[in-house]
Structures are given as structure tokens and as C-alpha cells.
Picture 1 (cartoon, helix red, strand yellow):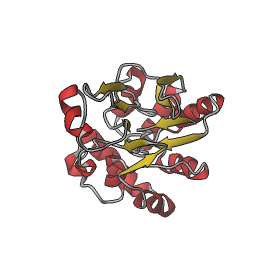
Picture 2: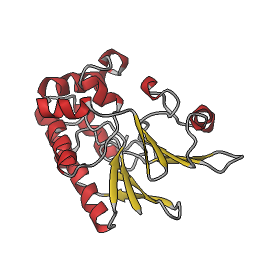
Picture 3: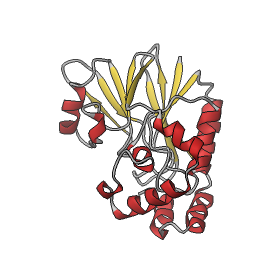
Picture 4: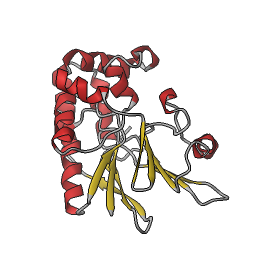
Length: 226
């Protein structure tokens, strides 16, 4: 099976639409989302509606949790906090119910899926380097795990077992200085994995952010991929 793995959409509908169009071209049998559907961007309800319409399995991210009151925005930086408070004020009841039923992790086609670290996912730990990956590997037994949260595509390999922990990157807010949307393609039979980058109308997403009254920085960073 060819599995498409997306993460960190962050209310960026133009990026999500372009990504889903690209996934269709790859003829994937299944799509899964690793969370942070909302936050930062200007179209949270529209992004949730798109995922719901396609019945895409999703995991809860920290911004999703904050939008429904399961995580205090005070734990976030000022831009994230402003965006999540705005999101919480305009999110619809169907969107709220959708986020409320999401779990912190799941197993799918032999892979372990989580938004942040597999090690105590409710703590929203970041995994940027090999040292931070070690406790994460101890928290799951699958041969491969996928996560998001950092917005940086990277693979960590456990030395003695060859198991992999893969960050699939971000659809709606890449931070590796490449503004194109990023997602992962995983072959569940062969174990092959690769990232795909997708151009999308960044200006449209930026204009939506500015029109909503959210901080200018949130619009500007999309164009730089930071």
C-alpha cells in the first residue's frame, strides 16, 4: 500500500488543497494526518471540513488541543498564542467536535503515528536531534514511526535495530527555508519512504492571514519557509 502522510497544516487551505491534489497524482491508497490542523493560518474550519469530507484519519496536535481548551495557550510563543486565541473564537461547533475526538497516537499499516514525541505524546516534546530521538524509540515497538511538530523533515535511525523515526515535514508552514508544502510517501510493503514538495499559492495564504487581522509575521514567514 502507498500511504501519504501529512502533518502541520496550520489552517493553510491553499497548501492543503495543493497537497491533496499532488497525493491524488501519486495514486495513494490511504492518507493520514499527524495533527496541527489548525493554528497560525486563517482557514481552520475550511481545513477541518476538507479532511472530514475525505474521511482522513487524524491525530491531535498541540495547536488542535489548545483550540479546544485541552492545552493552555500560555505554553506557546506570542504569535502562536494570538493565532490560537483567534482560532478558538471562530471555530465552529462541528470543527470543535471533530478535534475533541482525535487521539494522541495511532498505529496504521504497521507504523506508529504521533504528532510530537512517541515518548509521552501529551507533553508535546520536540525531536530535533539524535539525542532527543533515543527516548522516543523506547516508546514504540514498530519498525517505523512517523511524527510532525517540528516542521523539519528528517529521518533518525536506531543504530542497533535499524528502526526509523521519520518527520514528514509540514504542509502549511515549512520551516526548513523551503516554502513549498511538504509531505511523506510510504510504501507499507517495501518500507521505502520519500518526501514530496508541492508548490502552492503562498501569496493567497498570506493574504488570508492579513485579512483576518492575525500578525503580519505569520504571513511573512510563509514566503520564506521559516
